Image (cartoon, rainbow, N blue to C red; front, side, top):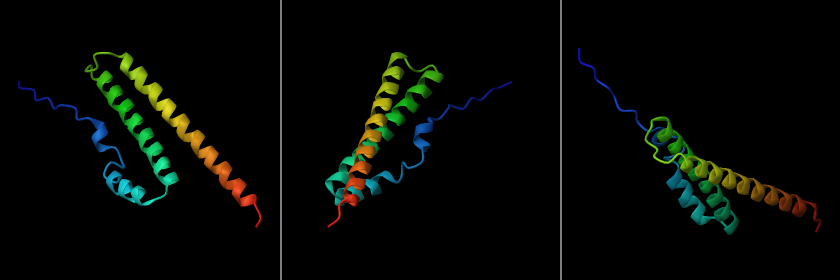
Length: 103
């Protein structure tokens, strides 16, 4: 009886939005400084979340040599998300303040 095993393919290659990133990067290059900063924050969150997914995959398949790297990746993703949320809140507050100004 012959058994054929298939290798598990990494999931991060099939994450949605992977094919849309070059177009988004080209569009952000045309925008303002705020758009560039905001796009870099979004990309940073995506990259850190992708890194966490890769580390989790490697850990679950037994390919991760140092499990502490997963904790570090989780912390980096948390910090990136918190920074993104804080910048978003500051931008929304500034926008609402500008709307209150009457000319």
